[in-house]
Length: 407
Image (cartoon, rainbow, N blue to C red; front, side, top):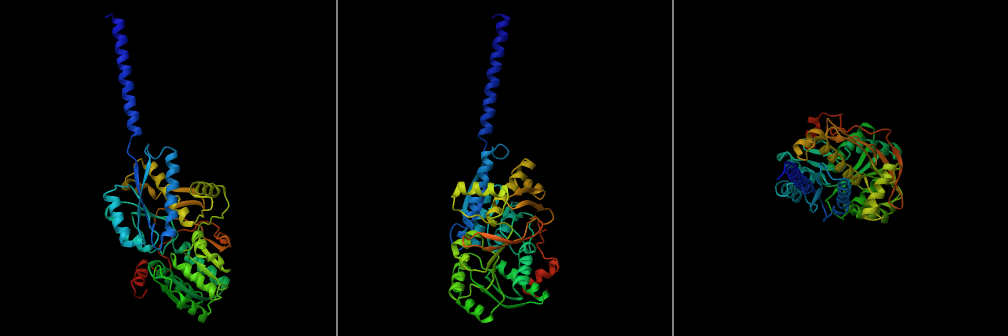
């Protein structure tokens, strides 16, 4: 073989080897396993109506990320489980998602009972939970990112607004678990310092429809305003009973009922019904309009959006941004940069507060319209700093109060 031929053969073989190597590399990139994420929400039980749309919010964010090439060259894959409106089941499923399904993050929970059941699981495994719902505060976990409001961003300013507008005599009704009890302890403080009066404080078991004693109590005490922290479908019975009893004219402020709940449970039939959130579907702005179009195009033109839906959607985006920033999807690495993230969301800028692992959020109050949308009647000028422990007491004093002792 002539020298020139030898060179040509060598070059040809080199080209074949390089081509084969490139194809193997390309296929390896394409075939990289997906990044698995756990979605832990109640698909059945008393909380199902609230939580199913949050699954869709996570799904929308994941599909948008995958359409742009995924994260770190890998697609995201959802592993969905049903918490069945049970904190005990949620804890078992969280353990399984982490140990058996090998997910990189958990998105989930609505009730504080669920979150508190999952909290020790993610802490034990140095894992990560993104929690999207407003709650009572009094918590800071190094393994949870809280994208919902705390009392300093919802309960406290919302109660002050309501008492200024409607009067100082307040009736408290809520579900019988952590969030309503803690929220009402805060409201008791606010009423006392403002010269107001809590005329009664009543609780219903989650899922209960036995509301007539509460209705008769409201009729008897004649409060200026009712502050509602009932969660789940018990609200349907409560709203219907208020209307039937001729009490629809009494101002009612709900802290846990969003657009979907208002529509499903008849809350829009009450003429003086208000809600306190950081996001309403009716907000102006191109980012919100884009979000609404995308959500309704994917899940139905008649689907309503809400604050927890937006917080779930943005929670995925914040986590994905942190993954991209650190170049790894393992929770221990993501957690190092998660506290530094901020995004422009449908409700405005959402920035993580590095000291508390909560996000800065606007306060918005809306009056419910017949179509279950909200007419915004008040909003804060800027996002409010999260204070998981309201600063007018020490953490130790709050802990004593929550444990049933003196503050």
